Structure formats: structure tokens, C-alpha cells
Length: 440
Image 1: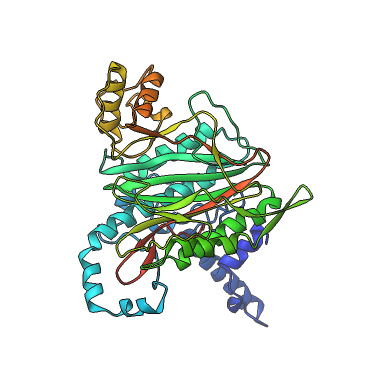
Image 2 (image 1 turned 90 degrees about the horizontal axis):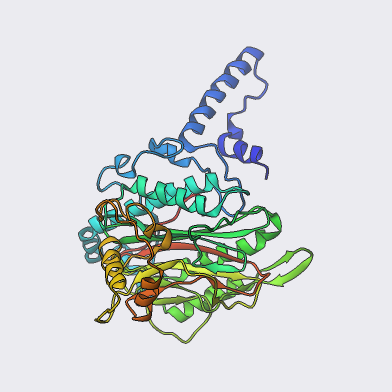
């Protein structure tokens, strides 16, 4: 479907056509129709993404009164308690049907409404930031410029305020055979090309409640099936997730959908594989990877999802071996939430650990943020918090188990990988896909 056809399908209804009308009536109706379509355009947006992999309009947030590009903090567009709900589905399984009408479960849900509203606040911010991102991603953009634009817009729309609100984790922009955990360090001038497949993964947090959601960018239509495989597999993972769902069985359902696809690239056909050592995960306050992993291949893990938990359901498709290894220069780190008490002998390491604790807590950060004038947070730090000559101290903290490093994860060179991800809440009465948008 062409962009023009998309616009026609979105804004025109066949029922509005006047058949065999007199010329003057026809002219009047045409004028009314243009006004009506103009009003619809103003309410829904008109700008299509300049790449494949997502749908909707990049300026769809204008229906809430947002500017284009977005500049109004999301909290100014919605009253407390009225942030948009995500997509709601019943929990799978006959044993869960009672939940939709149970007064006890509805009462429990009402008691948690303030928590859900904060999560929806973060989710709406994420939607608007990623729409902004989708409007600027084009061949020729430097990845470091793209990441900083996304992160600055995230800070602006969520009204960054230290641990109360801000970025959930650094922007990932992993290319081609790099599946995850790549964000540029200072001096990295990598440019996005027409033939690249890029995974865009970033987070927004409100009161430590993190929205983790990702999509894949491609310009060349030969990658469509690879993206479709990851998207369909993620949708299946979301569908079969819910209270009392077993993690190993969720992985099996994801794998079955993912591996039903194949993709032809440069005349060669590849089976699409799950990257078997990458997983979805539960999310706790200020902790992006909590205690449970959601596999994307079948396993014997009988651990169940439980009421009240929050999960990131993400899948990774590959044309390579379907297995990733650590490689390249690391740029993303996080303070270990269960860090041991270790006496540090290196003064710079002590100083850096203090800075990380004060600035990020257990939220992931990247080297670029340490090098900002505010050291990564305008709220949590005094002026002049920029970190210099920190690399040895960083390594020392990792070696002592106080920081966790997250180096890029790579499949075989020459292969291509894709990713889609949504955050879901297992509410007492239903499953809410809080990160759902009209883009994916």
C-alpha cells in the first residue's frame, strides 16, 4: 500500500460519497468532506514513518494536544489518574475466567490504581518519545546524535526529576548482527545506512516503574519477513503470558511462531531462528532485569507468572546461528542491586561508585552520560559532576562485582537480527499491555 493509499484509507469513508448528485450539491458535499477530513487529520496525525517496521503516524500524539514535534511534558496533557490505559486482555486459561467478574479482584485492582497510573504515565511518555524517534530516523543520521536526541526528548517529556522520573536505561541502537546492548560511546561516528537493520530499545521510568519497549528499523523491503517474524513472535508471547502461565511453555509458543518464518536476502533464503540465549524478563522498581526470565525457546522451566508482576516480553529473530556472545567495547553498566561489601583501595573507584549511587542508583547508565556536564542527571548532581579519567575505576568496580557490565551481544558477522518488545502488567482482573501503541 502506498503512503497516499494509507492516507485515503485512514481519512476517507466510501459511505461519504454522493451518487448522482446535482453539480452544486456535489460541490457542497466535496467541500464538507474536505473539512471533515481536515478535522480527522488534525486529530490523528498525518506523518508516516520514513522506514519499515512500525505503523501509525509519527505525529499521532497531536490528538492529545501535543505539539509537533513534541515539547509539552506528558503530565501537562493528562490529569493524575487519567493517563491512557494500555490494551487489556483476559488472562489465558479456563482457571482464570473468574477474574473478570470477581469483586475481590476488582477491589484489589482499585487499591492499586495509583500504581497503574504511574506506569501508564511512563508508558505514554515512552509512546510519544518513540514517535518522535520514528520521525527522525533516516539513512545518514549519526547514531550518537539519534540516541542523544531520543534521550533528551525522554528527559523533556517525562520532566526528569532524579529518581522520581527519568530515563529507564540508555538508548540501544544495535545494528545488523548486533542484537542488543549497543549504544555509541563518545567518538563513535557510526552512521545509519539504507541496508541496515537497527533495533531501537529505550526505557522511561516514573517512581522507578520502568517501561521497556523496543522496535526494529529497516528501509530495504527484503528484510520485511525478518521483522514480521520478531513482531509476530512477540505478539504470541504477549498472548500466552498471564497469571499462572509457565515460562517454558511461553518460550515454546514464541519459538513455534518465530521459526515458521523464512526470509530471502540477496537471493538467498534463510530460516528465521530465535536467539536462544536472549530472554524477556520481569521488572521490579528501579531494577530492569528482576528475578524471572521469559525464554524465547521451549524449555522445562515450570516457573509460573504471578499476579501483580510486570514483565518485558521481548523476542529476537536471527538469520545467523541464533546464539549471541559478548563482543566490542562496552558502553552500558549498572550498579549491582545485591552488590557485596568490598573495601575499595582505588580512590577513583570510590569516587565513581559514590557518583553512580547518587546519580543512577541501580538503573543502567552509559559512558556518554558520565561525560555530560551534569554527570548524567541535572537533578541528582551538583554542577561540575562530569566524570573524567574514569575508565580504570569503571573496570575496578566491575571486577569487584559492584557494577555489572552489559557489552554488546553479537550473532555471527553477516547475519541480521530483529527485536520487538512490550511491557505488560499482570493485573488481578486482566493483562494490560501498557506499552502498546498504534505503531506496534
